[in-house]
Image 1 (tube, one colour):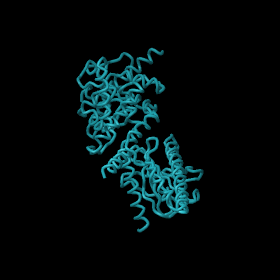
Image 2 (cartoon, helix red, strand yellow; image 1 turned 90 degrees about the vertical axis):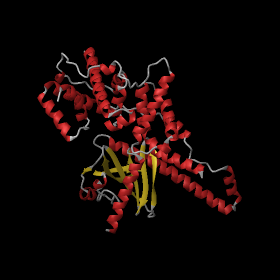
Image 3 (cartoon, rainbow over the protein chains, first blue to last red; image 1 turned 120 degrees about the horizontal axis):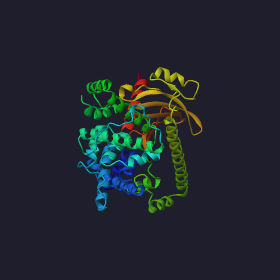
Image 4 (cartoon, rainbow over the protein chains, first blue to last red; image 1 turned 60 degrees about the horizontal axis):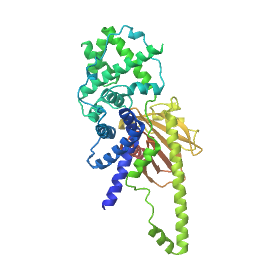
Length: 182
Length: 255
């Protein structure tokens, strides 16, 4: 009976996908940097995921949901035509940023002060895409490099270099803020 | 290895993503290059601070409810008005019985819902630093006797390391105002708490998964014991855990 199939499918979907709601919402918050936009995107993501659940072949649910969320977020940015794309895969100016710079201060003596979560979130929010996305997927959503590559549709090598740049930029911004605070 | 390469690969080293050969290469470079060593130390420090900070967001309950509402509802189907009326049409004795049965069923589900939320809270508590285990051991012959005398039940402690779930220890917890045993397993970095309590009902109840606050909870009953397995691992993995636990338990009883 088709109605029953639908119910069973919905139940399987609920068990498989809903446990990741906080993960998906977290990623949406960092991608869109707005609470209500993130809510809308997550809801749309779950609707699409249910629609395509039949073609889901696993094994990992999380990267699959993330890939769908990315598409939703990209569409949202395309709709707001006056804003730049959320996640651009073409190398932009930020991609040319050197991974590291010789700093005058001796880095080995610098110890980062623990900051409250709000301050760190702001620093992460300030990262340019696609570095922010890669950083969040690794450091906050705990995906492996392979899973990140799967979710963003880029080779593992690209993931690695983006992550290195993201962390270098984050640390630079972090220490710069601490310098100012002094 | 050049510094440029090392500056990328040291992150993979930090993330445990390198195979042994590459890890050795990066470590050798770091050992011989003070600049890269400093960068490695600085990045490790930053990773530590980040790991100590909760940077995740929690989905608002209203969002969860909206998504739930948009799914075809399987569990919360209300009986149609007509079927309720048909119930009344049956003899009064039968419907009285049915009514009391319904009440019992409703109450029990409420009860189960409350216990489920207590189980999930206990799981959350256990994840706080230092709360996970009272007895730390990967040896089932250490963990099992530890429960002796502490509970009115001997929780089965089964090492499932070979099946991909590492036994890490045991703990006393409180559910439904009673002391209860918790056997703790790990799957990769994920904690699985297996709560065990006694029940007067010896019939087998098949495992059923429920989700609360993003955690999966699979509960079942067997041999006079109630079990709740709780974790943030996927529902399929949790089902695998329960299957393996039951299979090992069956083998123990029969062997």
